[in-house]
Amino acid sequence: MAPQKVEPLSITENAMLLEDLHMKKKQFKELVDVKKKLFYIELRRKIANVKNIIEFWETIRELGKKYAGGNVILKEVWESFYLAIYPPRIFFEVSFADVRHPFLDGKITLVELSSALRSAKVGKAPGPDLIPNEFWKALPQIGLDFVLDLLNEIWDRGVVPDAWPCAALTMLHKKGPVDDPSNYRGIALTNSILKIFTKILAVRIEKWMESSEILPESQAGFRRGRG
Image (cartoon, rainbow, N blue to C red; front, side, top):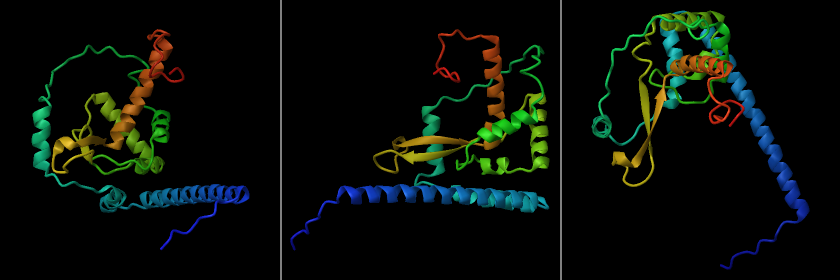
């Protein structure tokens, strides 16, 4: 059967199709925005109506379901692979003199916490605790007060919970046989609460560094508004 000849579209028809495409993309974006708003409204409602610890963790598990995944290589194989290519971690006992800076060592404020939450991106895979940024961003005031007290307790003691530094490794296949660990690129998914905490500290250090004029003007890379 001979292929049918396709007549080229006229300039007017192309313009109409392009305009229709832009309209459909706009409608799709508006629909996504509406769905996101409805999602956050429902999330806030669920969190606000939690009555006990069982309902709390049911809400967390529901949020974490969409991030489930896996690969064909056993966990023991991955452990052996990384133990072979990375040296063992060395721990040091270090003591510092108790010299405090009024800004750097001050109490974490609600303003700092709120700013860190606003900058946290949504739609990102969570860490091992399966708590995404959406959960922290949707907390009511009583929840924010609890988180603020927790962060300040950790800040005062200088010790983070053992579970915070843990990360979930997601392995992305690059090329070659899927049963060879060297053919994967690992992405470490850390707990979102740790990212919020370190974001607050990073902003503090950045403000202190800029106000103290520690870096020379020639250092433009990795500085806000300079590189």
